[in-house]
Image (tube, rainbow, N blue to C red; front, top):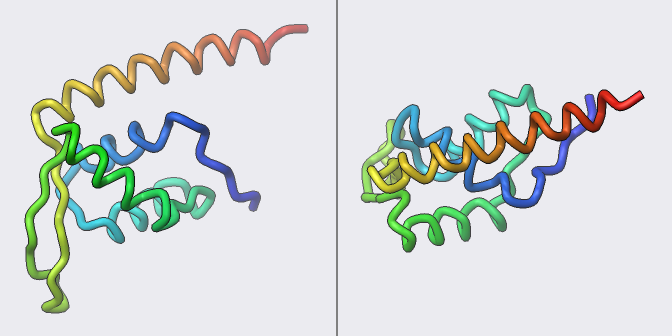
Length: 108
């Protein structure tokens, strides 16, 4: 199975979508994406954590320290109201781009 590279500009959409389902710590976000993509998409720490910090500065997500199931402390991120609005914009944009790309790839 071929691993896929995340397209530029899609990381925010991916993270916001995952956090719209439930609050998660960074590693769990990465694991959720990997599971949802059947192992084809990997979010590397070097791109995921800076994105989480950036989205928190923008007010799209909020975080708090919590104890995990194994008793360790982890910063848990959740989608804010502003993040929900941003997610709707990102989804609409992605669906538009996907439709255009589908039309181009269908050219004969």
